[in-house]
Image 1 (cartoon, one colour):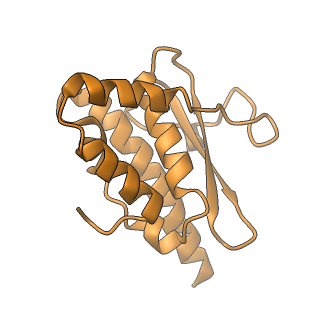
Image 2 (spheres, one colour):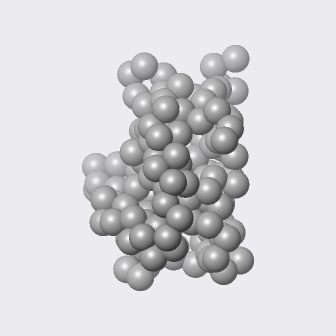
Length: 148
């Protein structure tokens, strides 16, 4: 396993230890229940296309908010109420990458989608979930570039 930020590494290790497919699916459903829609103080619908995740079937949006320490807090909107995998990914990214040093966030590969969800999802779902990871890491890279 690559060197991930500590909370993400622990979650991936936990999920990776689950051999039973149904148990893994249940854990991801449970994670999706931790999803919280972006507050209206941060963003109000209709959300701008600059925050829309490309290729995401669930109409997901990512909103980075600067923290006082230079890190970012990541907030999400998933407009499809059936978008359980997108909601789970939003909860994972928000919980494990918010407040993390930008260099660590920027280094997270989009392939964590496979470590979290396995290889059973459709290509369309994988593309959308990878797009969510790519937007989060892209915001971190942009913020790093602003600092130099």
